[in-house]
Length: 188
Image 1: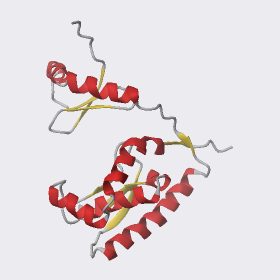
Image 2: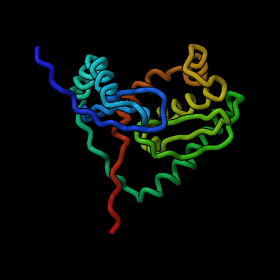
Image 3: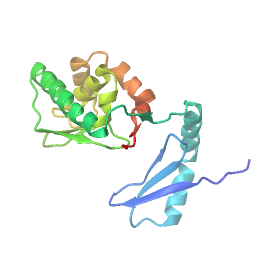
Image 4: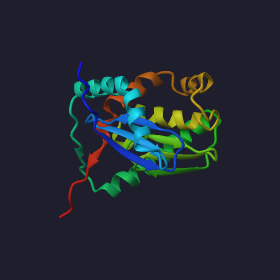
């Protein structure tokens, strides 16, 4: 058996652990603390090789996604996202007697939402392009973090109380979320 060398994109940052991911194109991205030696990175990638290859196979089977073109200027989507997200957040918070501090819009490439310990909720503005029930799932997920700052069994039970069908929306986001990444129409 010949071992084919893996090409990796290494990103050094202020972090404590090594992590690996495979993006939609099959590119291997290794995130490491600034002080880690290249030899340690090579060994880590070799240990993860089986997992990496399985992920690359999965990515090859997925349909190729081309970024969608926006019909309106990008600023319109962000303004609409803020309006709709605030409305849905307030609806779920009131319905389930929860509170949050602030809503921020995010442009993250890999995260749909987050919730800080101070109950500040970040939502990716691209969720405005998703089906409404998918947006509601992400909101239920993040509001559940205001009670459970983890992904424990109790956390998922809380999400299920807020949105009993959440597994369907979670699956949709995993499969079709990449189609929400956009390519802005150039303004002339």
